Image 1 (cartoon, one colour):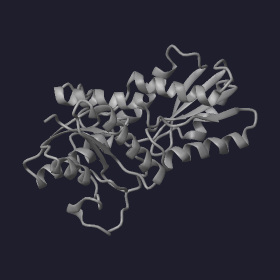
Image 2 (image 1 turned 45 degrees about the vertical axis):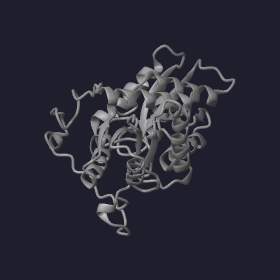
Image 3 (image 1 turned 30 degrees about the vertical axis):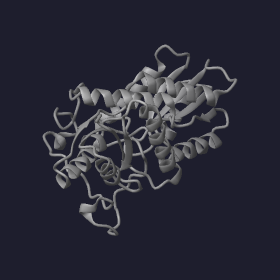
Image 4 (image 1 turned 120 degrees about the vertical axis):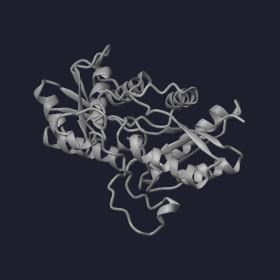
Length: 302
């Protein structure tokens, strides 16, 4: 029996985001079903289906070794701690099962191409000439994760006709959306496409659009347009399959050179050598139910 693919997402309070994740899981079932590869997926918190439900369903279908791919774009706290902890809890519950863990999806040329497609759709007939792109990531307390968003911004600029590409963040890191747009305006852009760097719909991608439109209303001299998020596509599915096959082959190639938990970075001295301590997940059976949740995340993917 071939190892199944388990998609492990963070979770969202947004019904559209949940529906998109579920549809994406179904897309991968269709894509891999002909090869005899089972697929299931779930979230570690905030919404259903849960990782526990997906793991249990796969185990009930006879699988004992799962290949889990984190549905996140950057290697921040969810990929480094929360998702692996959720998977390990399943192994503790059922010692007959095990898993291999894939790496986050980005950065990858497929993602840059998808971003470029979203920007082109937002531009319509307008020219790239004089157009800047503001790439907006989720934002993290992990400096390495924020640096990855900046790297994606530069990779998106390379070889394309945009005036320039600037990074920004919707939470936890600077610059924010308004500051990023002000910078683009100060640098001479006539038009800016705000590109949310998110896998699926949710609270934060919509917040990016709301903040961009609010800035546009106050600065009518700047043509501000909002691109769509990456979304449920065949291209993204192909990238997940690539990560799945890497995990099975043991070819993870994780970059730890700038990880604050392994390397002393200025301003993040407290993280060096610190253990990963995943926060409370009330949706996990080990933690009980109905205790509320003080952790403020609200997105499916990073």
